[in-house]
Length: 57
Image (tube, rainbow, N blue to C red; front, side, top):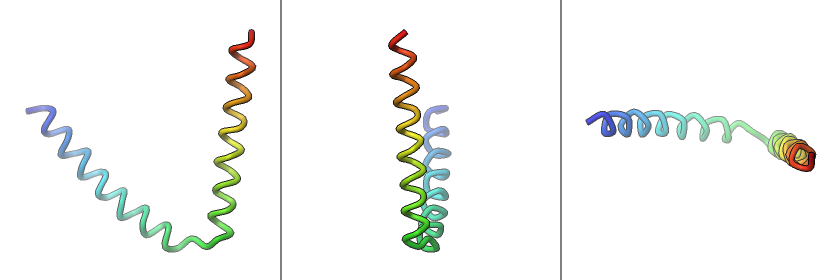
């Protein structure tokens, strides 16, 4: 019973997030999308470099 309630809540949250994300994406232009891509790439690069340095010790 608890799992069913949690599943229903997760589905509701996912549905709300989907409509929110669609409305945000509709308002973005190419400059915003490229900027977000660069930021995500830089964050992943920094994360990868930090992990490589940590595991090398």
